Figure (cartoon, rainbow, N blue to C red):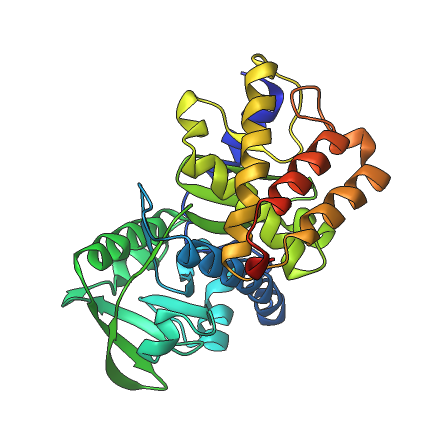
Length: 313
């Protein structure tokens, strides 16, 4: 197991329940709001690319367009302040809603609190009171919600400003997996076969949504092509490891597939070249021996762009 894989697996263990973008941050409400905006940016791109490529997907997932959090992901000392600032108690809170998503269509709003799914309560005072900081509870909820949406529209009991509402949420079929922001100064993105992870540092390196869409689509392509089933966690800027020839081949395939994936969602494929050119100029030292060079990647992406029908470029 190479160093990059060890690092990725450690992050995955720490952030295993980040599937729908829960995160641990400073308890200050403004800090959480700011990170929520970053999560929303990634969630919106992931939703758009995944939904646009859902037709014929071999392993579809159900996206909701909800960016969620719950009190147990925060330190116990911070929970009273978070509860007051976000109207969040023993249920699961809505931190953000992806515009134009099925969650928006269902009527969800920021700071709604989900209390039950299909009549099954998710209010758990005992699980919240005194619980150590953990993502386990949110992860279990994410799994339960995904399972419910696979079966059909879900009846969601929501508390909003003290009122109880029933909202009907349907799932959005998508391809490539859901995406999560990982708080890290390491400029990286990777996939695990089902999910996509993008570091906060990588998001800053992709200033436009079109550029970030290439990062997301590249990792989605790894999931779609089944690369992670071979036991490696793929990273956009990984380190050298065993089987470098295979990793280079898979990275090239992911670059080639990422172009039509992002194009199908209406993102500008030429932005992929712009991002790679930026990396080549400013981060030439970051590429690893088990990845194609930036020049090779630019040629792969340019060739993939040329294969897109004119009306989609």
